[in-house]
Amino acid sequence: MSNRITVLGIETSCDDTSMAIIKGDKEDFFSPQILSHLSFNHEKVLAHFGGVVPEVAARNHMEKIMPLLREVLKDADFSNEKISEIDLIAVTTYPGLLGPLLTGLNVAKTLSLLLEKPIFSVNHLYAHLEAIHLHDRVCYPYLGVLVSGGHSIYFLVKSSLDFCVLGSTIDDAAGEAFDKGGRLMGLPYPSGRLIDDLAKEGNPLRYDFPIGLRGKNSANLSYSGTKTSIKNFLLENPSILPQSSTGPYSQDLKDLCASYQRSIVMALEEKLHVALKMVEDVIDGEKLLPIVVGGGVAANGYLRKIFNESFGQDRVHFVLPKYCTDNGAMVANYALRNYQQATPYPQSLEIDAKGRFIEKKDFIS
Image (cartoon, rainbow, N blue to C red; front, side, top):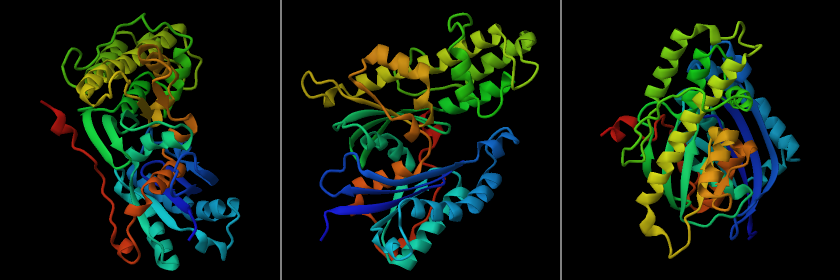
């Protein structure tokens, strides 16, 4: 029996249709071979609506997923005969938008039926953090910081299957705060990357925005007050708004982007200190607990700068930007690391999807 395993990863939880085929060792899961990794991003389509519309996203997944499957198989040099060499099908089943999730799951089930192969049901939040192992060796336990468009959560990760939630946003996630703030500033969707770019030419100390739950002895986050603050600021200072969403952008707006971004990032930095204090008892002697940062917002340049300055570059491990957004490689990688937990065929055909991972209201004290 071969000691290598080939995994097809399928990701359709929100607005990215992505697939990957990877091959890894059953004994050493670090840095598997990526045979193919292709994605289709729906940003240009969804920009017309100013954000993610579940029905539109689901329809776009349905249109793109089969052509993408053909391309990822072709790119990995998998002919119709060779497709049977796929040992495991990994698919995101939660959390996410139910329609898009079911699109990916139905493809996975069809392949499972045709090939009589097992399916691994993936929590893509876990996959975001474990994507660090695609390129970096990080030992367990580690403190996981998941920052994305829909979630901002601190985890204590003791193994690839043992994730303990330490704190969560109780309202908007960091990515939502960027996009909603950008919309208020008259910037195009998605706004996060543009705010990051404009902020590089701005003064982050010019304007002061509140940091939610500051001083509270919990690792929970809140961005509702920050968002309300920038809304009120713009009502009082409408001249800062650009004439067009595509620019040109004034120095005042660049300073606003830098200041708003600072409030979002400093909240994450402050609550990471709290999360670390909560898990001090698991630290082995003088060894510092590694920090892993994943999710779409983990690609933010200012976040990386502040975390490295506050916690040290040797301690903080950022998932590479190409694996930060929702992607098939992280899904396949997570299944590879836990392949023994896969659901065998035909039980695999009974797997279902679900939209939520946690209820934010449960973290409100």
